[in-house]
Image 1: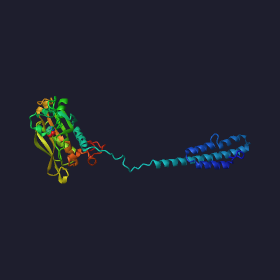
Image 2: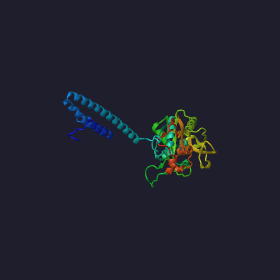
Image 3: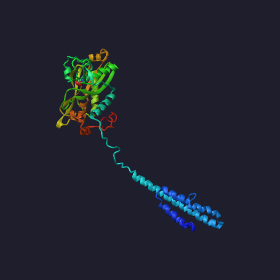
Image 4: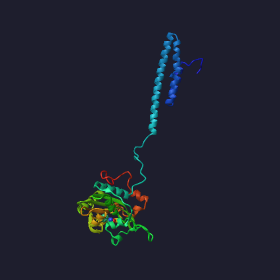
Length: 365
Ligand code: PHE
């Protein structure tokens, strides 16, 4: 700008209007406003000299300056609005969300069928008033056998194919074993809680056996209900109720077969109707039966070993194969695959980690 010949009002207006149009963002626009209309801005400085003018001239120049100020303010406001709008569209374009995408990423892991089925079993029995009891996997002869009315010379000891802990010749202390069933938890629960009692005890058990439906480690859930007047009818009702809820299938057919266990009298084994057609395991149809549990009325000697008076109390117990009922429900033909840790198998048969089984929401969806 030339000091001697001050910029004409028209030139000033044209220049500032140009600067307004060129301002790239709110900050640049504010700088233009301050330079023109701020306290020491070009327009404000001209306002200041009005006082020194003759009245007529002042009136004319003042009106012109005020009109200019108004036009500049209007142009500033328009530009400000345009810049804000552009900034918003820019943000919307950048922060665009594809709502057709799944709400969260596909989970990488999955829940193993044994864990899933254990949760399902616990949910059903919790609804029937059973709480969960636990015991050690490394047991001793007392809990695995003696307390369950299986004395050392009893042939049933062989039936269990028990793994014994290695002991050197003459080693002191008790003989220990990997529990071959969850029944030891019956004794431990009775000792700890007394009667009446209603518990289930899910957990790992061990037997020396290996084929399509047997692995050396597998899972059982023990059930125990003791009170003053519990009968075989209660046992049958509970098991039927359980199977109906668990298999989520009309027409699940159970077969109660008279059997023998040293720790129950009378005893019954329960089979479920299934077919193995084409290597595919199907439930509720076919001519095959798969044994899923052993059960019976708790033997008086077992109650005694648990510290409960058999003249006052009686009850039922059962032991069910968790892996077995998992195979049946989800159609998995080979138990050994459960423990191969093959990710392809786990992805195929596994369960979504956040779908916790509940009776209300559906056990398996
Ligand atoms: N413990 C038995 C088994 O493993 C099952 C069972 C439990 C039978 C309780 C009757 C009562 O074969």
